[in-house]
Length: 460
Ligand code: BES
Ligand code: MN
Ligand code: ZN
Image 1 (cartoon, rainbow, N blue to C red):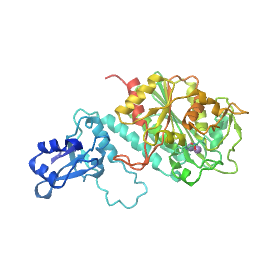
Image 2: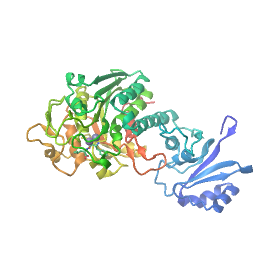
Image 3: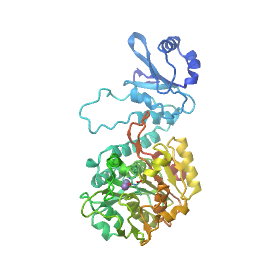
């Protein structure tokens, strides 16, 4: 295998328990080198193999017990530039998975670095493994990178207007139609919750509405929480609570990344993306605890806490999405701290009444290693969002099961759409791993793409 005239260097990935057998099969000089330098195959161990005259001949990666399916990202993260090919990887690590791992290992967020880092170099390149649908892998990886970039961008450069610009760029590249309802127009068009949550900020709130695809195709609608910064409003967050709240538009970023992958793959669907984009800010015109607000759906909402703002703006967007009764609807949001308490940062919970959709999401998520976990819409907790004076309260009066009561709140605003799920995602990595640096993560994007493709893709 050669690219141009330069031969591709061989790469090997090996489980710790299989190191001895692996060394037996390796050219003797390389096996001797690995023995002499004490290669054990532990997770994340990268050994460079010497060639003639001091050249680099290849590399070996230790996989430990093989628990991380994206472990091969370490290759593209660490290897010197040049061209490589996968000579040997254990079952379950090759093919599309290897290519995706390689792709995410190249992700960097360098918008704010004027001076290149000491480790920076031209990305190493991989000969595409045989039989892999490289186009699909790269469309999905592009979607993930897009979402991560949007989330990593700090709030000073990523307000509602900038989020709109980003949506326009992604949509217009695919010939999609974008319409935006902004500021006072939100009230005239009957989006009172989006307007009111966003009105304390000089950066005007808006509803971004992207439509793509042919009308006769099944409707797939994606709704994403676009809180460009969440101070908590008057029920202000403390310093540590606010620290990462630039990521509170993570739902919006992920639906845009997912939309990119869907459109770029020309899936036969009529796609709609709805993003309520606001900044949850503090000022004299901020909405207050105790206020009662009307909503697009018609329900009155009592404000128990201005920090439960995500469910408010989503309520108006979901009510609009639900009018069309899409065949499939996903709602993505960094909605509650309680979701993190329940399943941590690596396993975002989702909620749906549709058992078939739930099992598809769990299965596809497991397959592509974008794990998700179903939590119940436990109706008996619904009394927690009762209000003494209005139809519903935005903050539960029950301190437990906060991710569930938030999902139950959203559920009140969807009545026609049968097949839909809400994802309470962290949009963040706090324990870095190969290909997943500390910072933004596009949770669920790949699992959802796989489900959309499974359900609506053209059969080859
Ligand atoms: N954006 C936050 C939720 C959040 C916090 C996501 C930390 C990821 C990490 C959301 O707007 C919020 O503040 N939720 C409150 C709701 C409460 C006031 C009912 C929460 O979870 O504490
Ligand atoms: Mn909040
Ligand atoms: Zn929020």
